[in-house]
Length: 76
Image 1 (cartoon, helix red, strand yellow):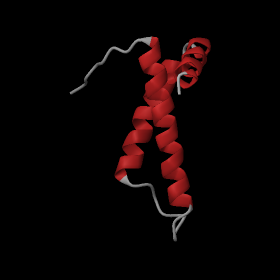
Image 2 (spheres, helix red, strand yellow):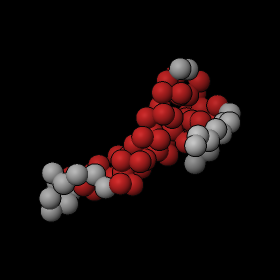
Image 3 (cartoon, one colour):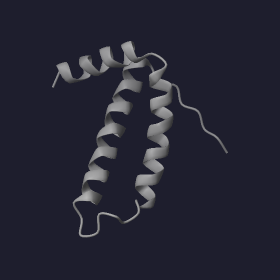
Image 4 (cartoon, one colour):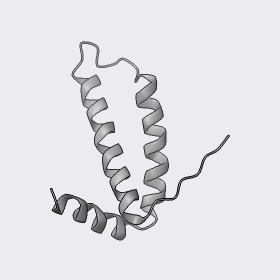
């Protein structure tokens, strides 16, 4: 079964930024563990699959993505 969601440019940028951060944190956590060579857990693998799809969609218009990411962090 496949599911489809519709995101505007700002929502896509927010999702992309969030997943990118989560991916980086999981990798760093694994690298800082007692056994840095351990395989990623199921959650990390699944999130990376989603992140890959979001990246592929966002990559189609990187200028818009970067503009929206700037707009998101401008209001912090």
